[in-house]
Structures are given as C-alpha cells and as structure tokens.
Image (tube, rainbow, N blue to C red; front, side, top):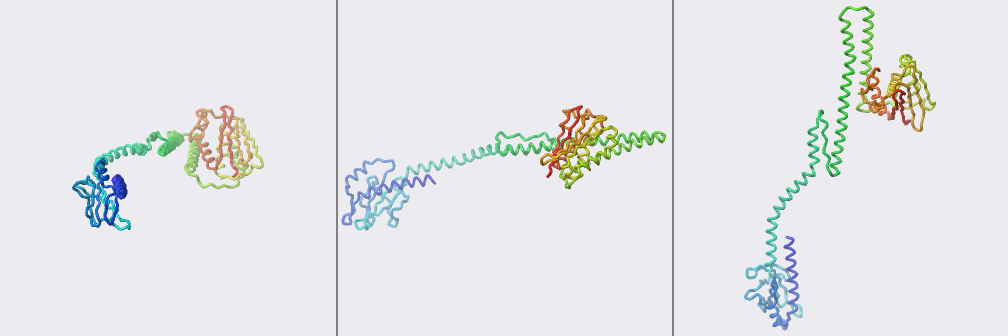
Length: 431
C-alpha cells in the first residue's frame, strides 16, 4: 500500500508537469483553441521516446476533439463532463491501464473554453506493484515461520535459567540439598536471581545440617544418663544389698537425674530463643549483685579448686541497662567455664570498666586454654574439645551465650592459648 501510494504520487507529479508544459503551448483566439506551434509540437511528439508515453487531447467546451498526440492513433482518452477538474484518476486506454487528469482551458477573460486531457501509462508501475504483491504474499508466511522458530530459539535461550531454577527446585528435598542452579553467563537479573536462590539453599542446607547434628547430639546426651540410670537400677535389683550400697547408688542416680534436668533446661532455653527474638525486658541491674550471686552459686566448685577471684569494677560501670535473666545466664555460663577449666589454685580475674559508649567485661583465667583449631567451633551446639573429654559438660553453654549476646546486641570475643588460659571479652552498648 505504501509503495502503491508513492507510485501514484510519482505519476501525479509527472501528469502535473505535462499539464503545465502543454498549457503554455495553447492559445485561445476568438474562442478558438489552437496550438502556438502545431507543426513543431507534432514533430516533437513523434520523436519523443519514453518508457511510459504521455497521451494528450485537446477538446472544446462541448467535448469535441480539437487535436491529440500522435501516439493515440485511433484511440481517445476518457472524457467525462461530470468529472471534476484537476483530479487524478485511473482509467483504461485500448485495454491498457493509464492514469489521467482533466484540466480546463481558459481564455483571456478566465472563461473555460475547452478541456485538456493528459494521461500516462501505468502499466510498468502496475507490473512492479503486482510483482511486489506476489513476492510479499509468498515471502510473508515464510518469514513468519522463520521468525517463529528464531523467536522460539531466542526465547528458549533467554528463559533457560528459569527452567534451570524450576528443574533444580523439583530435585531439592530435605535429603537432597546439594543441588544448585547453574549460573548464566551474562550477569543480568536472572544471574542475580539464580545466585540469590543458591545462597538461600546454602543457608537452608546449613540450617538443616545443624538441626540434624543438634538432634543427633541431643539424642546421644539424653541416652548417656538414661543408660547409666538403667544400668545402676538393674544392678541394684539383681540381689539384696547393704543399706550403704543402696544409698550410694541412689545418690549416684540422683546426680545423673540432676544432670539430665540441667540438660533439659539448657535445651529448652536454647530452643526458646533459637528461632525468634523473644520479648526482652530491659531494666537497670546491679553488676556487683549478679557477680556475687554467680560466685555464691559456684562457691563449692571454687573452694574445691581453691580458686582466687579478683574483682575490679569501675564505679561508673556498676549499673547496666539490660535483660536481667539473659545477662545473668551469659555471665553464669562464662564464669562456670572459667571455674571448670581452671587448674587447682588458679586465679580468675573479673574486670568491668567503661570505654566511650560501651561497658567492657573481661573474664580472664589461667586454666587449660582452648586449642587454636577449636576456637572457631566453640560456639557450635554440643561441640566439645577432644582435649577436655575428662571435664563433664554438654557443649551447650557457649551456644546459649552466643545466642543471648546476639539478642542483647553484645559483641563477644574469646582469646585463648592452650596451657596459658582464656580471656572472654564482652562489649556491651550503653544504649
């Protein structure tokens, strides 16, 4: 349609040029229309060679022929008295398609005295248009089919990462968390999405692995005291025994029950704060009172090892705004470990001071210390150093300390050298 419109426009321009040229060759005298140089015009028309010939006719006001170009021979252009002047239209001449215009011939007074008919052949243009139409009709469906497959190929390549995400997601189960989404070559939005999902899968895998380890260790720690209790009671009922022997075994069983109760309390405490931040109750607490209560609770163990406690508390650091229960648990676990791993006649130093906007707690002992390879794992649940298997415990204390420090926004740092002792440093924000 665009080409056809342009071709018609081009023919119209040719017709307009011919109209202007031939209008200048006409003269009107006493109402009669004549060519100024008729003989020259006829010779020029005879000698003119063109691919698309121009046909000319001069008519009087009644439509009678005055003159015409020699190339019309016995044919005549279409004259229609009702046709508007200067309007281009299509017609036929001797079964050939033409484009024609009808122009009025005016005398000196501006009165119409005749008609000028100008036409050009449009056969060549029509052939071009028909050929183009046939080519398009054949090529368009073929191009559509090619574009369809090209679009499918490009779309398939572009959504491949999405298909990879879907396929990988279908393969992932609780027992199969090792699958990861292949990252696209281009670092676009799909690359970021795939990488983010892979990181999420890493976190989920680590969480489930910790859960499995936690369950395994918890089961083991529960079975040990229960097995001891069961064995002790089975031995007691095999035969009659002395009262003292019964009392000894009952006391031993009670100690194991207390140990089991302590394990349950620690597990419940850790589980309670593991997955969500519980409601914290901040209040002004007296640090000296917490220290004294903890030392009183551990006094029996301190006296057995003859441990010397050195307190150094700055007056401005006596009071602290925090959650009493959580902070007491943190301090109890740290001091309990210091006592547990101290040598006979050891020394534990407690230093509390203010530094800028922080309150600093340092608990230092000169005990067994922690091997360098164990320092990164000491906050893991149920982790216990193989060098300290002779010391009873569950490996939950520091896990609870780490979790509670996180809830209270306390930074904890542990420095230790094997055989020299350990320093636990708490950095507590004042606000």
